[in-house]
Amino acid sequence: MEFRAMGNLRIRRARPTDREVLIRELGQRRFFDDRISRQKRGLGMLLTAWRGSRPIGVLYLWLEDAEEPELRRHILGTPILNHLEIHPDYRGGGTGTKLIKGAERRLRMLGFDQVALAVETTNRRAARLYARLGYREWPHSTVRCYSLTDGDSQGAVEICWIMVKPLHGEGQVEPLQLQ
Image 1 (tube, one colour):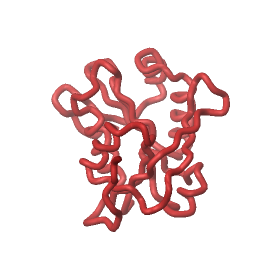
Image 2: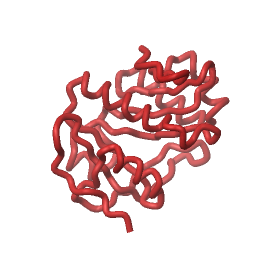
Image 3: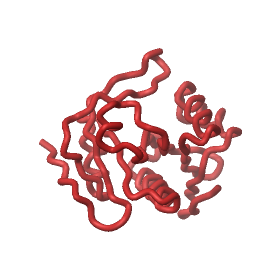
């Protein structure tokens, strides 16, 4: 399913046949194996951004219950944008924003009222992008988030802000206070 062609940028759901080119261009074999498998089981959706035949970005739409207990407690049933990554040669060109907007459109079509994401507290650039797109920090503490990596069998742990965005109308969450 292709979401929308934007210039020569295409945003679409990953296909199982994309696996090898995604790994070659973006690395992270373990991540792509896991997310393509989850997508096949209907647990989420791996969105990909393509320039011609080259994948330049990905975003996973996590539709199952969150792994982190705090997220299950406070926003159960809320989809999570996970692992936004843009190839270094293409960062800053709007691809991340287009992936996020494509995911939000899909979630609205699926009937979701809000979406969440986690951003590492040291990643202020990403937090500013998300705030600009309407995401606001939730009123609870930071969360220990788990990141699937190729180099660690347990995955990495990051300290994250959780940001939430209503998909219809105005939200009730406060703006992110970057210090």
